[in-house]
Amino acid sequence: MKRLILLSAAYLVSALTSYGASWYARMDGDTLSVGNSLIERRYLWTGGHLKTLSLEDKTTGALHKSLTLRPDLVLTKGADAGTDARLLTEVIPQSEICPSYLKVTVAYSLGSLDIRREFRIYEDAPAIACDTWLKGRVNH
Image (tube, one colour):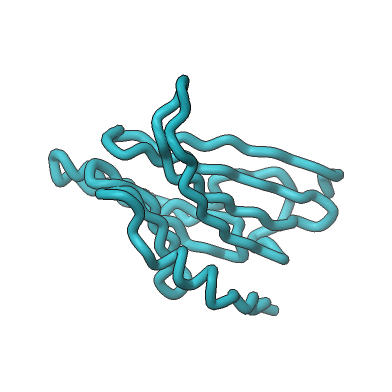
């Protein structure tokens, strides 16, 4: 059974708006795209349990499509889709030690395991960083 998560108007505005000169995070149907003027990664949303669709190097035009639609992060048996998924975006301002960046947070659950993935997209970097947090128990 698929679960529909209703998103607030504020979320829709932030998720569909470009930030700065080049970084962005967009939901288009069941596809999440994150990137900047140099790189883009597209994911199948699957209740927050992301599956890479493609990675594009915008400097060369090379588009690398995923050969399988397996989840990027496999932690439990048989869990194909997440539940209670949330997508948040936030511009983190420049500090004395770090340039500004777009933080894209994907949070969801797989049974009794809560997962939070935070992507960092910098203005002029051809890379997308990701940190992952886990809380709870893994169902075997």
